[in-house]
Amino acid sequence: MSTNVTTGQEEPEKYLHGHHHSVVTAHSARNASETAAFVLQQLSSPMRLLDFGCGPGTVTIDLAEHLLPAGSAVGIDLSENVIELARSTAAKRQVSNVSFEVNNIYATGYDKRSFDVVYAHQVLQHLSDPVKALTEAHRVLIPGGICAVREVDWGTNALWPQDRQLVRFFEIYNAVAERSGGNVNAGRSLKKWFVEAGFTNIAVTTSTWSFSDDAGLKWWGKQWSERILNSDIATQAVEYGIASENELAKISRAWLDWTETPGAFFAFIQVEVIGETSKPAFL
Image (cartoon, rainbow, N blue to C red; front, side, top):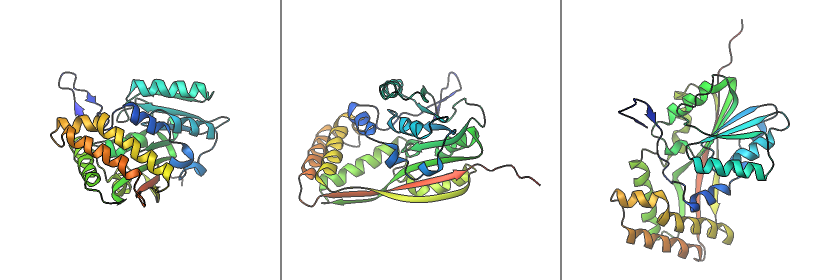
């Protein structure tokens, strides 16, 4: 996070991946039954939920449907374009108990105790100050409210075959993320961040994303073949002198070749944390 020297106001950070079509398409495939499975049983009507960094909103809309008939969900994101897409998707799905706003998760402007639940998926890894974001989540939650966050830990990845170009992909990705102030191994720090933000009754679980069948291999390999060429990761990798366009083209080809390799496999761990805000003590 940076501060505008003219206004003195904190400016939101730039999202590492950007919002190229390949990125938004991948994110639009997400659903709450997978990304929020670790917290769904704790959600019920008439809860009010805030989705930090909602992206194209498919998960937020699923969560809103889960909170029917009297609950509601609000999704916030920095990108006006993805917020408009989220609103359009909600209208097409005819889900009326959800709304979307352009907002900054470091300083939302919502009143204290506005929400029962704050949810975030693959957001904190991109922030230079994840504890500040969690502290804001804590502020807007009611006493006894819950914050549920899921983050990847790229350091747990298992890739086969260990193609030289794909190994280089992870080196480039990690370097760009670090240069941008992010943390590719956010999962392993997630519990610590919750503690530092003041949450209690913290519970940690893990799940795994794995790709081994034809459909999974093609979905993962194709999207990264495109994203390493066209998303903001590619732009920043070249701009920062981390990789050349020629090198990125070779990596793009390697991802496509990987999808056709007999025995190809890729997996990594997701860390899921749920924390509560303290309830008032009564004598």
